[in-house]
Length: 154
Image (cartoon, rainbow, N blue to C red; front, side, top):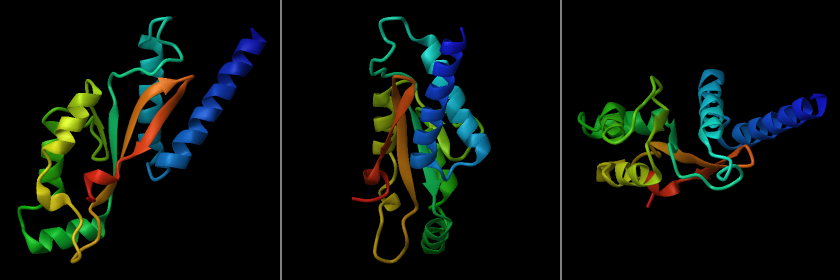
């Protein structure tokens, strides 16, 4: 039993290290939400899925850049963070956080990004609006975190 407990502790430390390295900009509360999501995904897996890539309930995490959002708002009052969140919430849910969006499957996440307005893309007159990451597919208790540069850049 002690060996099993040590193994679980080591898995959690490895997962925490991966999350902090890739999405370390998240607040402690947001990191706990992502860790809770990982636990829920692992607990909902069948024995055959453990250690396999699982395509369900992916997250989209956005590190918003306030300078870019403000510059875009100064260009056009309709181009707001709330407008982008509305598009992202069409197929996903926000779970009370403006940085974390949850989807039923990877295709919904991709469709949600595809439906974002074109003004979100970087231009020479302002900084980026943010950096996006997907968190998906648990493999050996560690989520796969992928930076998605195409969300705000071409």
